[in-house]
Image (cartoon, rainbow, N blue to C red; front, side, top):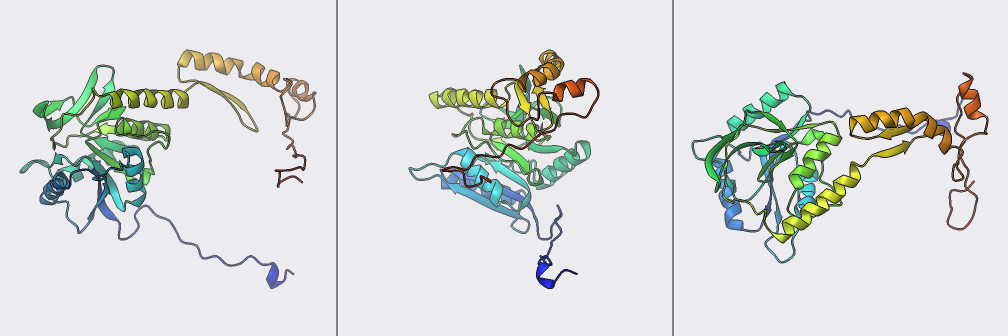
Length: 309
């Protein structure tokens, strides 16, 4: 019988649940460069029903010379948020007196819950496809704009107002920076994780027309393009048990799948191949015998290799 010293130590366990007690309904997070604008925004939210009882407000202080970019600052907000839904918004948005309020947003998000349990990001403007937008906003481009039917599933969102479902555990890319394309980045991250993005019928006012003509905008666009072009590139994936070809273009994906088996066999015979058992493995597989097994390669002990056996 094992002695008491051989028994594992008792470690208390706590059950995790999505509906933990004391959770807030909303976290409203903002990058602040103008305290006056921010206070006016908060006042409009308070008047619209976003009360301290079940809402919290977070901000990143960007009033000084040193600026925290949106990717970094809003990632901090997502990590710190306690609300079931996290509103990431500009300091110059306003709930319209007598217009859409907390009650309407609750209803729109409940509608999304019923329509698509895999939604994770929502906003008031975004892109569906080349040449097609979905918009529900008042801004310097026009009052009471309504383009398309709602809710509309989109591939990108505008940054002025974003609602993030906190249980989706999303974050912005760590290898991008600045104040442009971060909502689109979040939509792509959501898509990679199996979540969807929507424009909803929630009407607010945005005091700014946006700034898509600056040199910084163009520079950030190229950085965004470079990062996601690399992230979404076609590739070969070698696991310990299989070789896979991934490609988002259907015809190339089909060709890649047809090539998987010959490339798998060839790759194990290349000069740089390592970790596979003897040269008869593929012959045995062709005859219907047991598949080749992976033999771990033990590193040679030497300087800088603390795990060598």
